[in-house]
Image 1 (spheres, rainbow, N blue to C red):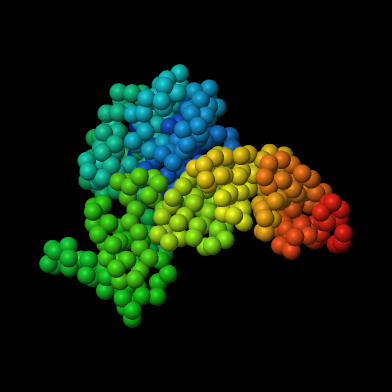
Image 2 (image 1 turned 120 degrees about the vertical axis):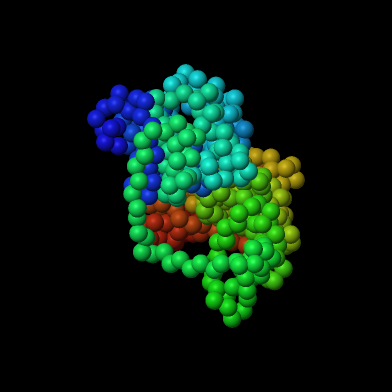
Length: 422
């Protein structure tokens, strides 16, 4: 960062690796802000990429390309990259060879800075776990030339550090040791060397009365994908809710949402559930099998609300992108977009008997009533002096509508949309 602060030209040809407690994100975000061109960040985890992008200063205009994007969203992101609208681009190592990304970056070569985050993966896992990491040094040199390369890790032995430098062509390394007082380490040596012994010991830790029996959540790292799948199956067999997660799984298998879930709704008979999340997608779940059976795409920001129509054929979602979407489940999630709000939508609610109306409430101080069959706007319900936080439609056929606002008022609307009381 010192070299970056003295001027962009001083970074030309700089190749460095940093480890432990130096503030990894800041190590590349500040140079990215000072440098005139594009910074490409290569990261192994989707959740990590989204988290870093969310925390970045707006001036860095970050973009994330990831496997769970719809083709439409990916194409729009690539178009914006090509037009120079993003200073920082976060991708997985597998995407470095992607022809569409290479084409979008062509006019920005050589890149100002390439960052390899969690760079210990280059040597520790590369040849089997993430082959793209193993080939990353050669791929960057051949297809994505950069004026500077920065490799970051908080987990590297001296031996791993040397291998990273060799693989990525790094000459300068910075290392700082950090004592983390919130960590407690305990080592159990498997003297038999048998995988079965190790698995039996892990299972014994979570049986009733054992040391970890009452722990609400446990994360277990395995050396191989197969080990993770086998251990998850054995944990499930003794009654634990366990699931394996690794790069060998298709993104649709990786527990649906990649970020926080904000909304959930149940179908009338309880067979299906719909969820909406910060990753801007919805998921339809079969509760009898626990499987994700449909992805509901179209929003570009977090989904904050969801509801099923009474007949179970439609799912409505409300989003931070100021729109409500209605998905027809009989037609594989065919989408109808309901625009009109000028701020995020906090509530979507079908009339619970016939579904003849759909109510949407927004932070723009208004609620909107949509005809259930045509999805055309029937009425706009005004009256609040602040954000409308929640709303509902009565189930008695009178179609009374109640809304609650940030202005600390509750408003009731009759079918002709007149405010009756506070």
